[in-house]
Image 1 (tube, rainbow, N blue to C red):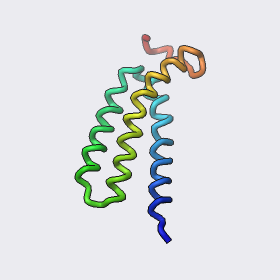
Image 2 (cartoon, rainbow, N blue to C red):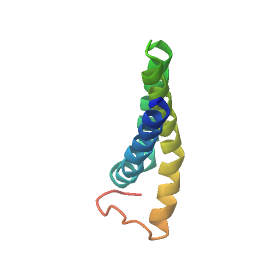
Image 3 (cartoon, one colour):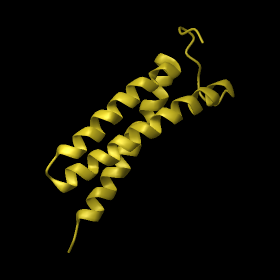
Image 4 (tube, one colour):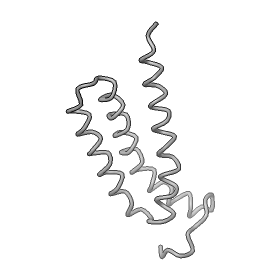
Length: 95
């Protein structure tokens, strides 16, 4: 039996699941200026995926990188969700 597909699928699920709350927290504490962090993490993971010799680790790093890139757009969408009142606004941060 081949378990690689299931393992990579689980890795993708966990990666996306990790970035969902990270986007919410990043927007709450840092606002949309946190997009730089997602870009840097994504570029590092993408670069690492090019040099890792293990195929499955390389694939997971690619998935992780594009989950981080996806987070960039989600930070801006999260700002709109906060404006609509769907998520709490950080009272200590100036908008």
